[in-house]
Length: 111
Length: 118
Image (tube, rainbow over the protein chains, first blue to last red):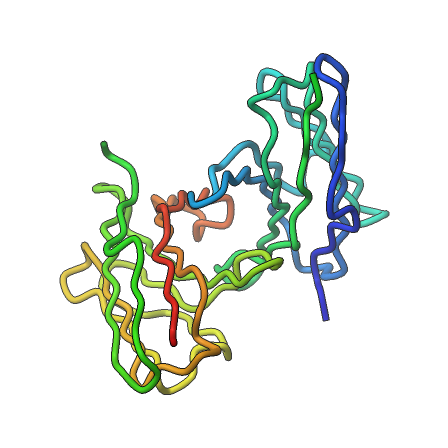
């Protein structure tokens, strides 16, 4: 039973446009959410996080939105750059200390 | 480089052999985590340490797996009698373990050890 779902295995966006990556969760105990970026043969790199007491967090080109009632979060990247091409993982934490990850979305930025 | 380091980066072994991986966390971090990632999946939590104490184990951690963090610094993950299903990327992460129970504690990952069991 997948508690964190990323329903788009891949997403293609033109350079300079906005990339929107989505994530849904089912466990009401989750109260902290993170986005990681992963290049091949490397470990995940932390991008941005949000606590359940907030509905938005921004860091430069990256903004994460949290809709608790819908159990949905999204990562916005604007403007998208070629170096943003990678696999993006949504992760959640609550109760237990291990993170629960989605399966990832492969973002491809086209020139 | 002051990030999380893992050794070896790659390990190829024959079924039935034992393997051991090492993780060195970021120096001031007192929490250390192990995850496993297979193709097409996100990382899956295995276990975690607060200093030298192993506080949580996932049901994925069968009795062939053992992890230690003897002095609260580096950690080792051993897999005994490896099986082909153990082939995966093994990831280590560390976090500061801030006050408030660490609920908003960010985990930083190492590059991983890729295990191939033949």
